[in-house]
Image 1 (cartoon, rainbow, N blue to C red):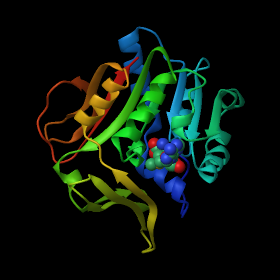
Image 2: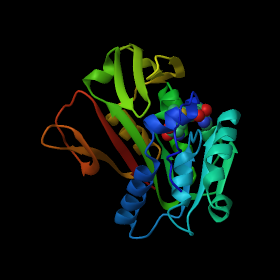
Image 3: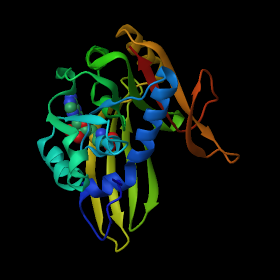
Length: 267
Ligand SMILES: C[S@@+](CC[C@H](N)C(=O)[O-])C[C@H]1O[C@@H](n2cnc3c(N)ncnc32)[C@H](O)[C@@H]1O
């Protein structure tokens, strides 16, 4: 299975989002390798929280015939889109090993899995410490003994400003807009727009009313929820200071304007 649909001229926001934002094979391999490195065994059962179109869950079952995945999301139409456009591209055997559930991620703790992953910062919908702790506690409850939680995190001085980032993709430009950021609450109004080479625009294709969480806050919350060996995977940089896509365990690092990292905890 490959995540890359052939992207002709399209207005489909899910296709554009997947192309612009997601790297499911890279993420699945990172999780797989890191789990094996720390536990000495492969992770088999995987859960993608806030799965949206479940592209990562699809990449997970494609890792091998012993892999299973559950994707959980609240939004029925998005799950239906994932079934029609992503699960449909799996082999019959892969499709049998994946299950999509429409539910609140805080309310599901079965079946127990080796890995829970919450990516693309989706947990930022939880705006209070109470709600975030509730989520992380439930993630822990959903893990088998020796299981691991992976969350990606974004930050840096730029993340606490109003700004726009433009990234060129084949046939379109992906625009990430942080329309507002409140330094008191850390609430951020974030939007994704798409602009096409023929001049058309799709503004506010996705909007997020989020709280930006910091690494120390998340580490404290994981600790309070009972996780152990809580650590950060930090992206290495090349000689020009550009991210390499390779993440290494780090205890200290230098300040950067904009960064993405992972926070990981073990049961
Ligand atoms: C930013 S999208 C993430 C899509 C995909 N996981 C990714 O990595 O790009 C956030 C998703 O979280 C879902 N969501 C928000 N709150 C949720 C909750 N409490 N339980 C389950 N899903 C939730 C939304 O329906 C949406 O599909």
